[in-house]
Image (tube, rainbow, N blue to C red; front, side, top):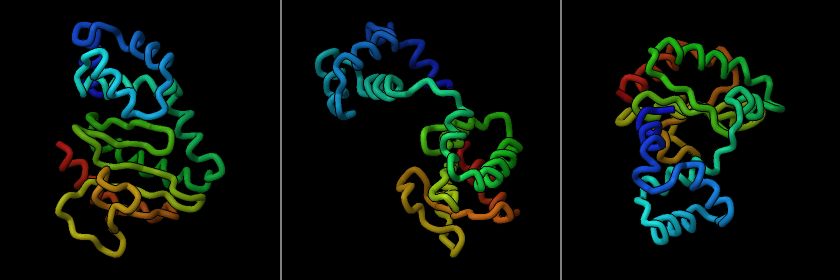
Length: 180
């Protein structure tokens, strides 16, 4: 968990009057269908600032699932992609001890000071690797961000483990360096 989030959670009771667990219980009872409804409720009815309200909502929805389970679930029926994922992670882990690997329900975020890469099994035969490489021109292989939108600036589509090559490693290193 990143330090800013840890600090926010630690200060939540003091700043909002309730702990994360208390807010989670309140939101569960309300059972808002949309994020915006919960945001309006916390800000309007309880005077919670936007940053705290957003954090409370996101964290209250997260299921406490083991990181390994999250990754395993992403690759169910896509087991042929696991060697690609594992090679990407092995490379990323060599960059430094400031890399945070954060599995989510459908993807894995790679973070330094901010997210610089995103690994997502897009289909049964392809992983999409999103990269934040501002001002880097697109190429045939280093395409636009596609479905990643503003989360990433570029996307590389990987179907075979040998596509995780020196060129891709350099792009990952560059994205890592820019996330400082």
